[in-house]
Every structure is written in C-alpha cells, then in structure tokens.
Length: 311
Image (tube, rainbow, N blue to C red; front, side, top):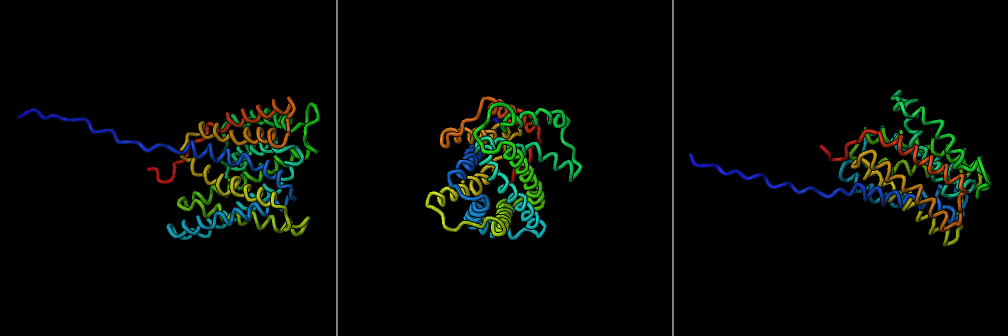
C-alpha cells in the first residue's frame, strides 16, 4: 500500500466576541443616568414616568420584531415582567430622591449594592444560599456604605446624606426584586429577551404615573433642556444601556463581567464631578472604593450563565 499523506484540518476561524465591548458600552451608557436626571431638574415621579414612557416607545419596534420571530411568550413570563416592573418603578422613584440627597455619583455607587442584595433576596425567597463569603463581608459593606454616604466625616455635597443613603439602599433592594422576577422570565422563555424588558418598563411607567397623580403630579410642561435630558435618560439608562449589558453579560466570565460593570459607578462619579461639580469628600472616596472593591470580590465568583444560542 502507498503511503497515505494526512494533513491537519485547517483551524476553524473563531468569531470575535463582542461581549466585553457590549458590557463596556452598556455600563458607560448607564453611568450618565444620574447626571442627566439632575440636569432635567424635574420631580421624582415626573422623571420616573417620562424615562419609562420614552423607553417604551423606543423598545416597541424591537418588541414587534421579536414577537414576529418567536411569537408571544407565555402568560407567566409576561406576569413576571410586570412584577419586575413594579420593583423597577420603586427603584426609580427612590433613587431619584437619593440623587438629590446624597449626590449623583454617590447615589450610583450605593445603588450598585444590588449586586450583593440580589443573592440575599434569592436566599430569602428560594432558599438558595449565597456563598459563605457573603455573610462575613456584610459588616465591611455596611461600614463602607456609611463612609460613602457621608454619614461619617466632613459634611458632604448632598442635602440629606442619611436619607439619601437609606433611599439608595432601598432602591438597590427594589432593583434586586427586578432582577429576581426578570430572572424568572428569562428562565421560562430564553428566546424572548426584549419582551420582558418591555413589559417591565411599561409596568414601571404605570406605577410612576399612579404615584405622580396621587402625590405631586406629572409635569407636562417642561423646558426643552428637560425633555432632551429625559429622552437621553430613557435611551442611555434603559433602552440601550440594559439591552447592551443584558446581551453581553451571559457571554463573559463572572470576574470579567463584574469588573466591567464597575465602570458604571466609577464613570458616574467622574461625570458628577466634571458636569455637576459634585466633588466627594476624602472619606466618601474611601467608602466608594471599599464598596466597589467588596462588591467586585463578592460578584466575581458567580457561575457563568450560558449565552443564548450556546450549545
């Protein structure tokens, strides 16, 4: 028999991963929200309502396209999205007040405590225990939050640092509820990525409208500056920002995603200094660094979720 010559198979070209780029762009997009809210200068309920209303309008064409491709999701998926939206609406309303109380950058740092609170919510509701390192880290986080919120040391920029810190943490808890119900929707219907976000945003819009009508009202006559700022909050802080982050996170290792997401509070703090002149005290800077470092350490050990379409 003649010699048989074998050649190694040509390497299969790998597609470039856009996951890191998507998360970076999404985090930077989200970081502008608090500064834009201050620029808008509207009431809490007005801000929450219009950012959600504009986001619903922006998401509607993408929703129609998704439904044409995959059909309508089940009722339980839609209900999960609506419940997630109620939590998201509470998050927006509380966070908007905290921005004025403690400053745009600090409020963004504190609301990122949802990365820690979400596993605790899962533990309370589903009995899925968080890693052992969570409980020893809680006293460290509480001390760091007190420093970041300006409860210790020189007087910070905000009007009411104690209330602002409490409201920002309550907003983080509300966002943890949003993540909990959104997770349920994603598990039930993984092909529907935009649909739960759309229903959650619509539900948050309805909650903001009810709160606004029963309290301070929803402002309809705004300056051009306020309209533009609110439209950009809807685009960067909701429709575009979270679609980018939601698409990119499943495609990254936990350590990478955790590190990239910390660009959001860091960029928000820098924007608050540059655009608004809200300079944190040295004590607040130490607290912010401690919060972000602890959150990163706790979040980097999460298991990686499969990306849509992965085998």
